[in-house]
Length: 113
Image 1 (cartoon, rainbow, N blue to C red):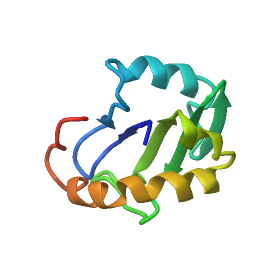
Image 2 (cartoon, rainbow, N blue to C red):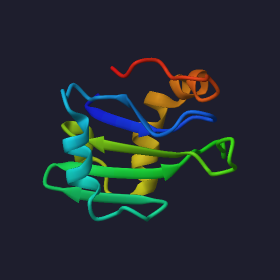
Image 3 (tube, one colour):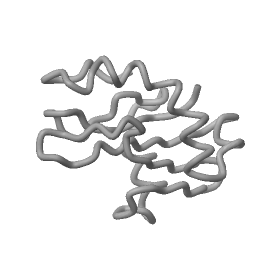
Image 4 (spheres, one colour):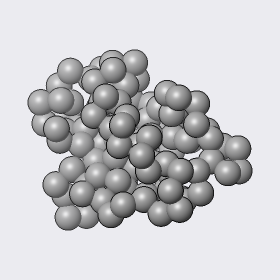
């Protein structure tokens, strides 16, 4: 699967948990999310890449009471099938659901891959 993933945990701030094979995920992230900074949900196609944001499907909140957002930059064949937040959540969330359940409550997440 080709995507980068950024989120935050119960006590740790916004981090990239997956780099999607990119050396600097922030460049790709900034490029595709530049038009959806304040939207709680987003699905925006930029060329062959999709910016996807949705709140945690389990309703988890951080220590300050804010809903945890999940943000993805999806590319490659997986991006071809994503044309809405709902479809993106259906396609991408199963790839990270268990992983996030294991790290969201840690004091620090594992290093990004």
